[in-house]
Length: 301
Image (cartoon, rainbow, N blue to C red; front, side, top):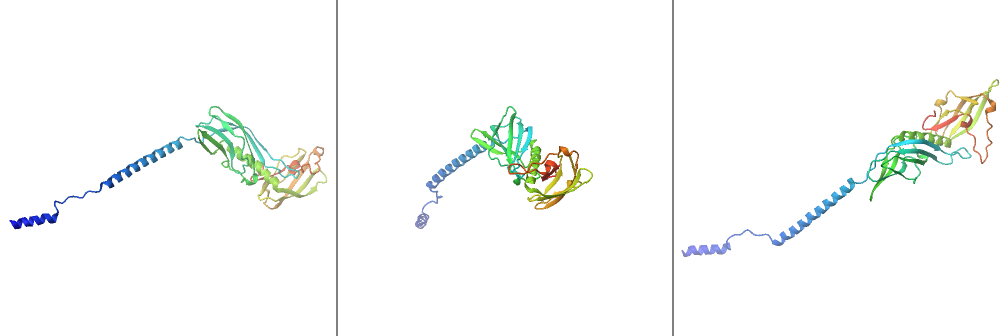
C-alpha cells in the first residue's frame, strides 16, 4: 500500500496536476478588434465617397446633339494685294438657325473646330432649350493647314455645357452644315492656294489675219507645294474662249505647264482696257478676261 501511495504521489508531483488548454493573451484580442473596426469604418467611408463621385459624374452635364439649319450663306472672301496674291486669310461666314437643344444646363456654341481654324475667341452663342436660336458663324481659315479636298467629318461644333458648378466642353458633329462647310472650304482655300502659287510667266499669240480670233499659249508656273487644276469659266461676254485640253490640264507642284487657248472676239468695242499696273492698283489676272481659273484639291467646274 505504501508503495502504491508513493507511486501515485510521485506521479502527481511529476504531472504538476491535471493538464489544461493554454489561453491566448487578452491584449492581442483587444488590439485586433480595434483595428478591425477601424478598417471596416474606413472601407465604408471609401465606398460612400466613391458612390457620391459616381453619382456626381452620372448626373453631370452632357454634350447634346444639335440640329442646325443654314439661313443664309456661305459668304467667303479673301482680298488680293497689289501683286494679285492674297493679302490675308479666307473669311467664311454662315447665317444659321439652331433648333432647341435638349439637355440639362446652359449650352453655349463656342465656334467651329477643324483644320485651319484660326479664330481663338469668336463671339459665343447661347443655344436655347425652348425656342430656335438664330445667329452668325464666322471664322478665318489658314488655308496652308487644310488638307484638300476637305472631308465632311473634318469639322465640328465646339460646345460648352454648364450645370451649376459642373461643366463640360467638347465637339459634336455639325449635321446638315457638314457638307456645305466642306465644299465651301474646298472652293475658298482651293482658289486661295492657287492664286498664291501660280504665275503666268509668258504668253505667245498667233492672230488670225481674216477674223478677230487668236490662238494663245500661256506659260504657267507653280511655285507651291500642291498640284493645281486649271479650268475655264465665263469671262467677258465679248470674248469666247475655248481650249480642247483644259479639262485635263494640271500644273504640277514646283513645276510649269503650257496652256493652249483659242479666243474669238465677238465685239471688240466691249472689251475694257486693262488698268496700268501700279503700286496702288491690283494687277489684272487671267480670269478677268480669259476666264482661266485654277483650284487646288479638285477640278474647277
